[in-house]
Image (cartoon, rainbow, N blue to C red; front, side, top):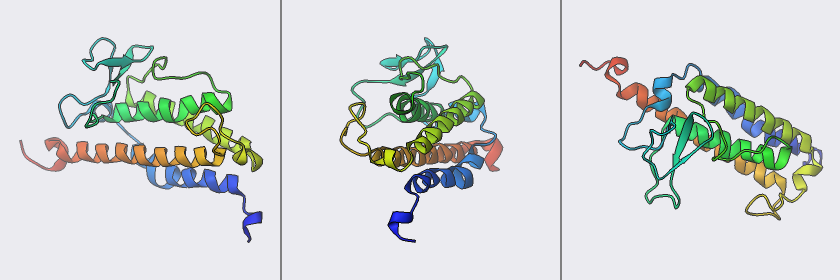
Length: 195
């Protein structure tokens, strides 16, 4: 098959779909609220009940807010699974779904963050469905169209944004899996250690 016959849209979607279906999704099954909010270090950024955060910025529209600061601290704050999922759901997916695929407007400030792991995973899957449908709808020609002023590199083709978003998903959700492993292996009741 030569490059002219390759279905680039399918290939780009499969980059993410394969990783999700064969490596990530099963790793997130059964995520508990304890794991979702667990922090291995003091003062990690998280998603918290409104009014309970000490972070300089507490973004969100609902009962839970996400910790943040601007400018971001150096070194960067350590973040929980809840925070990382919030970042992926809102900053990586929902804002892009709104900007490029006609989904409702979404921002860190207006989002209703999940107060449970199950709700966060439902939000993640909903945003992934919108993203993949939007990418599919681009077809081949849409991948070549410039991203536009809603992104930092407006002249770049949409294919570049698709690749970027997939890298972000793989990167951040792999971090979630690592945090889940750390939680499991550092708690005495689950790692075989005696109290």
